[in-house]
Image (cartoon, rainbow, N blue to C red; front, side, top):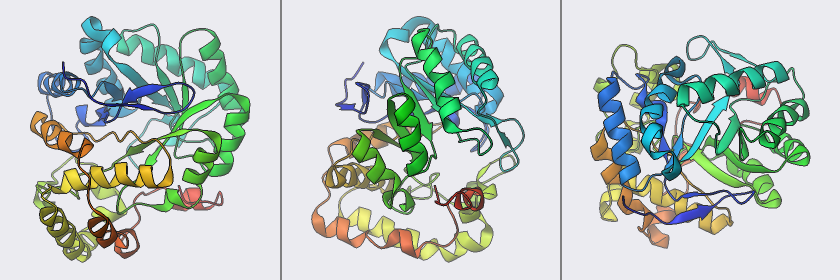
Length: 333
């Protein structure tokens, strides 16, 4: 197994500099059979992406069950994260739960599916607006005391929620979409994380493959979840085509693929702001894992990074279908 550089997030949690986002082990971006999904996951871990991120909702538990096949023989090699809080339904129409009974129910189900007695990191996937975050994190802290969870995280939390949660129990990391075209977290969530010593795990660092060389709207078939996100509407894909071409041109000028530049930008941005980052790209295909690896050592120069500064302000369409809900809570997240 290859060893990658490690990153110290918060609460003494250390992970590989690049993780693997295991939502891709389900059919969310197109069909994949279990054996192919397992082969890709195994390849990622062999390549050093030992920080494996999943959730109870991914494929209605399918992602966790596939990971269990690797966990059965290699548990000690993996920093394993899962999540709870998004409750059933199709993308865009799910509920959110953060009550204590749900927290305790879901950890048992996830541990059973994963075939392990503990998680290294457990996230609240979305904050329940009807349950004080102190109550939810208090229930999560019980799991730490019981040895079922080692560290706690929050996904798509606001700065205020992060501070309130951290006052109950140390939060190791915040996970939110963050990329060269999705930078809203930099206004308040990232500063709060820096203030509290919390690390950052950017999900969708490749903007759901939109920032990669190989993306084409023609690839989006039946069952693909991306059309439910505003940026993947036909109108926005057309409006953003020129921006994507510009991005890929900048990547080529830097001697990188689009995926490599997108990841390298995040590492550089984390260094600039002074926050540890561990992006978690995902893919059904092992060849994409190999493409990502050079980004860890890539160092785009200041001129290249400067050419990317305005991309987030120029893109058409929100990054997520739930921004209206989050904005009602006082902060887009």
